[in-house]
Image 1: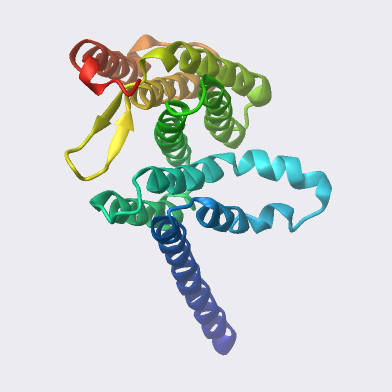
Image 2: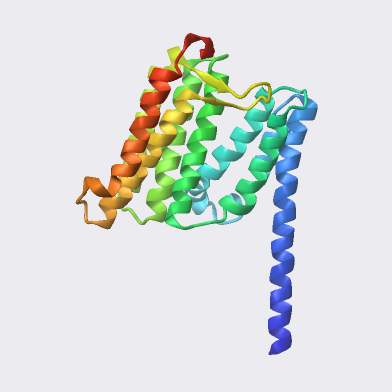
Amino acid sequence: MADYIFIRKSRNIVSSFLHVILNLLLAVASIGATLITGNCIIGLVLVVISKWRIFAVNHRYWLLNIRSSLVDFIVGVSFVLLAYAAGTTLLPVHIALMIAYAVWLIFIKPRSSLNSNILQSVIAVLLGTTAASIFAAITDSAILVIAGFLIGYAASNHVLVQNGDHDAAFISLVCGLVFAEVSWLSYSWLIIYTIGSTGICLSQLSLVLSVLTYAYLQIHVELDKHGNKLKFANVALPVLFSLLVIIVLIIGFSQPRFNIH
C-alpha cells in the first residue's frame, strides 16, 4: 500500500512538472515565433493546438467545451496579437507578454474559485479589448464590435456558469450585446495608453470595460447570494471604485494626443 501511494505521488509530481514545462514552452514559443517571423499565424496555431482537449470528446460536447474555454482562448489569442502588434524588434513588452502568458497558464487559469473566475474574466476583457482596439484602428469597426460581443459574452458566461446560474446563456448574450454597443460607440475615439518605449500598451476602452465587468460580476454574485435582493453596502466598494476609475480616465486621460485615429 505504501509503495502504491509513493508511486501515485511520484506520478503526480512528474505530471505537474510536465504541465509546467509544456505551458512555459507554449508561452515562449507562441510569443517568440510571432516576434521572430513577424507573423502571428504560428503563434495563433499553437494557441489553437493547445486547446485540443475541446475536441477530444464526443462531438455533442464540442460547443459546450468551446464556450467554457472561450476566456482562455481569448487570453491566448490576445497575447499573440499584442506581440505581433509590438513588431519584430525585441522590446520589454515581448518579455512581459511571455512571462504574463506563462503566469496565466500555470497559476491563474487552473484556479476554479469564484474570485479566480472573476479575475480570469476581467483579464480576458482587459487583454482582449486592448488587442481588438489596436487592430480595429487599422481595419474596421466591425472587428471591434464582433470582438466586443464575444469578449462580453465569454467573460459573463465564464463566471455565471461556474456559479450555477440557470439564466447564464441569456444574461451573457445581453452582456455581449452591451459590450458590442459600447465598443461601437467608442470606435471613433479609441485611445491607447503606452508606457514609455517599452511597447506595453492598454486601451481606454479595455480599462473601462474591465472595471465595469468587475462591478457587474460582483453585483450579480451578491444578487445570487441573497436571493436577488441587493444591499448597496455589499457592492459599494466595487461600484464606487469602477465609477472613480472611469471618471478619472475620461476627464484626466482623454487628451487627443493619445487618440490612435
